[in-house]
Length: 193
Image (cartoon, rainbow, N blue to C red):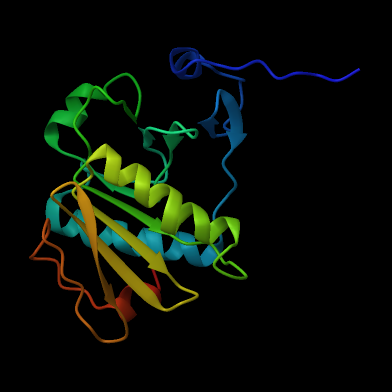
């Protein structure tokens, strides 16, 4: 006898609690567990968190726990780091979820988990699936930090489409949203914090 999983609506998903600390993304109505991050990914995320909080304060910079509703088969994402506005803080008093009826966050950052090739799930998820979802969601700036390729890609939303600029080595990362941020790709990729 086979078991057919129950498909949840987004509203049911928001109410779901299995009594654990597990995190799930909603994909085509099914709960997909979010795996833990690698040590390096955690280090890079914490380094960026520290850099952004020194720039704009701690309330608006949220690592690993903010849930973002997106369009598509996978309806929720947990970016590695998100920068929100003061309005989001008011709207998210009950739950750290940005729904489709809220404005998009200012910035989403994904640190790519190790991958074998460009067809690998980790590569596909951050470089293709999330890129399209974040673009459709209207997130003005999306960073893809790829330790394996030693590359930081900054995607800026221009006329509804992302335009990518890649940074490597000692190149200073250029952020339209946070121009006062002074970081090189190497500092981010070799994060020690």
